Each structure stands twice: as structure tokens, then as C-alpha cells.
Length: 199
Image (tube, rainbow, N blue to C red; front, top):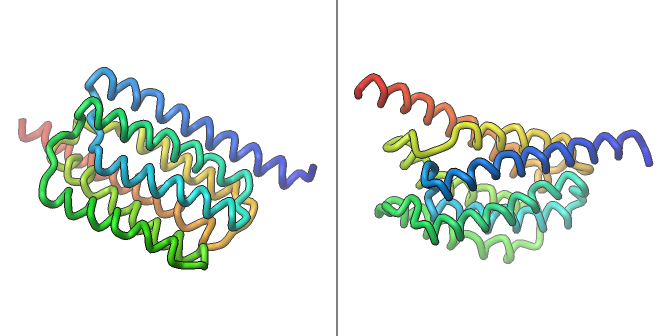
């Protein structure tokens, strides 16, 4: 086995570990009612993440794709748990718009035979999934976990490093989601400070 493959496997293993480390307190927070994820965001993220994993495998992402597969499975579980716990139950008209736009875009990946277009569509859909969480994070910033999104920004950076093949199909999704997590963290930090000074 070449040094390059060992290097890729190490980064993939670290990315999977970061995924598990990020999800554990988030899941515990949901169970303890201290974290209230928006169910629409998590349904969208679970769907897109798992499909991107399949596209990355098809496009030669190799071991770098496995953290995305683990994440897709856990994300779907959080969506189910959020629904059962009725976390983030306030659903606005805007949330419905994000949800409908995201879910109606999912079949488009199937219609494109090029995995690059599939990942572009799925990345856009996943970004739409941030909509309800951005709205909730703005209104109620203390209901979201900064550490969770920080770990996911780091995890997605590790995924990019661990990929065996670099292309838009393999790289766009993790790189874009890492950036989105950082921006969401900045919004939540800003709003937490604002809410604290107003209170």
C-alpha cells in the first residue's frame, strides 16, 4: 500500500471520528431538549448527503467518501429523532418554501447522467436545507450548537483532503458545506452576542 493511500485512509478515519464526535453531543442535546434541530433542514440534509455519498463512490472518491456516507446515515437518524421529539416545531411559510424547493430539486440528479451535475444540484439542495436553520439560528441562537457546526466544518475539510480523486463531483459538496457551517457559526455567534446585550 502506498504512502498516499495510507495518508488518505488516515484523513478519512479522522473525518469519520469527527463525524461521530460531532453527532454524539448533538444527539444527547436533542434527547435532553437543549438542542432543537429544525426537522425540515435535517430531512433535506439526510437525503442529499446520502445521495452525494453514492455519487462520490461512483466518481472515484474512494475512502474520502465514507465519512459522507456515515454522516448521511446519522443525519437521517437526527431527522427522525427531531420529528419524534417535535424539536424545532415552529414551521413558517418560508420554511415550507425552502423545504419544497429542496425536495423538488432532488429528482433532478437522477435525470442527469453526469455525476458532476448531480453533485451541483445536490449541493444547492443541501444549501437550501440551511434556510430553516439559519432562520431559527437568527431568531433563537441559543437553540443551536456552535461546536457541532465547527466540528462539521473541520470534518468536511478532512473529507476534501482524504478524497482519492479530485473533481467537482467529489469536492464541491464537502467544500461548500464546510464554508456554509462556518458562515452559520458566525451568524449564531453574532446573534448570541446581540441577544445577550439586548437582554
